[in-house]
Length: 304
Image (cartoon, rainbow, N blue to C red; front, top):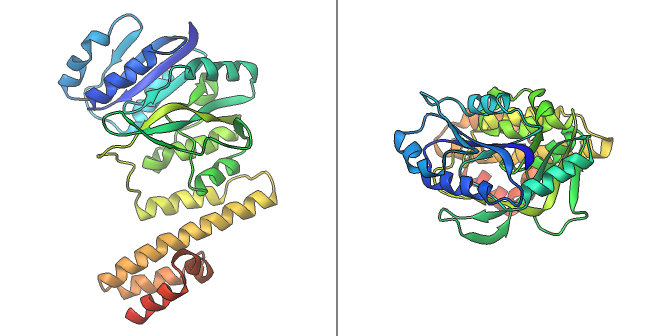
């Protein structure tokens, strides 16, 4: 039995929750404990998985619904094993992940957390044939040893998946989960973790990431993305080349984000906001040309 606690963060998705629990029970090596940390779901959620409870599977409920960070923190605080997994209730773990990832952590004490690539599945649990990242990489495992490297991964339109992450429990507890970043707090958390210990990312897919309607991560507000950009901009990079690449990518994303808001403001007649967006320091006309092309830019400004 592995020295692992798998915490499933649950809220009002009984069918998905059942699949998540079953995927943990199907592991090639079992964790010591499987804990469902429910964040104030309706009573039918508990009733629907009653047959799975007992033995190593526990239900830890809540009287009310709280912010995600509250549920994350209490799950991590109550884990007493060497390693901890904190997965979303709508995802599923592939059978070898706990065995493979704990072996990696056992072999290298410098690793704070290890995550993996994943298969996309739809709302009924069928794989789409796509993965979060290409299966072919320069090495079977990527390592991120600074917050700037993590920020660069996110700025490259990629990510370090949350659900399959296996944390060294004591290290994970030493890093604050920043509540003010709400929907993007996992990206910030991984950045902060990388400044404490390295992050390993396995290219081989070892979990299933569900894409379905009603996901609150489908839309990120403009101000929140600017807040995340400011955080990424100040991250510690390994060298000047990494820093230059990161800032270049962030600048392009900032320009694309402002351009979208610019077009929206023109549509509603808010010309002062439109002008201010074009005047921002990080808005680059050269990046705008790359985003939409010179001909389309001319059409936009002729209409304005």
